[in-house]
Image (tube, rainbow, N blue to C red; front, top):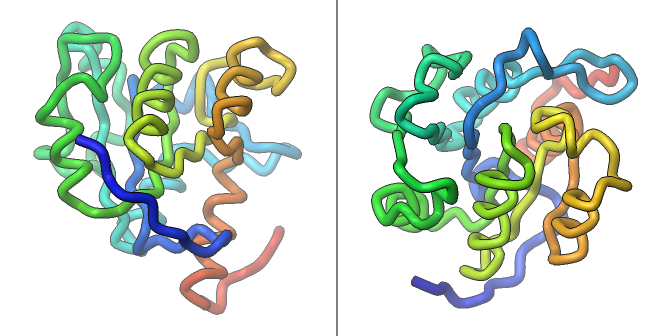
Length: 180
């Protein structure tokens, strides 16, 4: 199901975003933002709730226990899948498509598999895809990695969790725009 291209502003506004954690990585292993800021997936989940950004978490059926932050993701949006690429699961893809929010923010594990395949498939369906590199698989920590280069070359926008929080805050014009 492809959608028509619609031009949008450069700033990510929460009203246009949908957040998808693909095989969420527990914060104990990851989640240290750039420059040691320490922004992790729970910070993003709290901000998503505050700004009414829909959040989904997909996982392979046998990886259910790896999810962290379960309490911040609505039960109906925690979706098991049987394929590596969540975008191939019609239930998941159609739920996201129905939201009519075409800025897809991705984070999670398995850079070579589920995460990159989701990003490439969503790009093919005309989504603006942004990837939180600091809340994803270690292989994406360095933009020089072949996986990161491939995703960037195809149009995926790399960003950090902290950058996303600041853009959402700026876009809605809230007073809490501290950098510290």
